[in-house]
Image 1 (cartoon, rainbow, N blue to C red):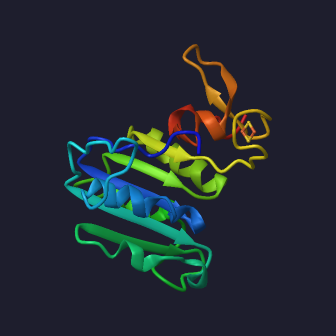
Image 2 (tube, rainbow, N blue to C red):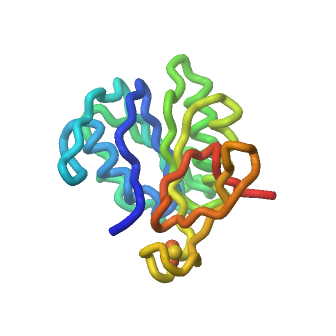
Length: 183
Ligand code: FES
């Protein structure tokens, strides 16, 4: 019941980077961006719809790609990758993202959720190309209400140091550039 979410952003080319079951939140994100559904209490306004939405979704193998049909929405382009090449491009979500970034209209915003190494790689790519990005962390949570500190993540502070932040109440969505994935 607590924490933040992927609140709508003003951007031209919204790109979703999802790995494994990390695609789950993005159906709602896309429906809201397209004006098909409204969320929040009270319902929030989406003032600016992206001109383009691209979903880059990957899994180890085709059988692990879940809910692919959920993204069959007008105005949404779906690009798939599997590590073994059993569906879509052989490679990783970052393989898809690198291709997209090299195109004439690269992503202007990246929202990401998936396994931590994948999110770290997406965050690095976004930083490298100066594309704003958010990640939704999936740290294990014991209480879910901000009391136990089992869910902490290392988040950069304005002075350049990092401190622990509770994913359940201060996340799970953080600016990708603020998350300290590695020492
Ligand atoms: Fe207990 Fe976040 S899960 S503080």
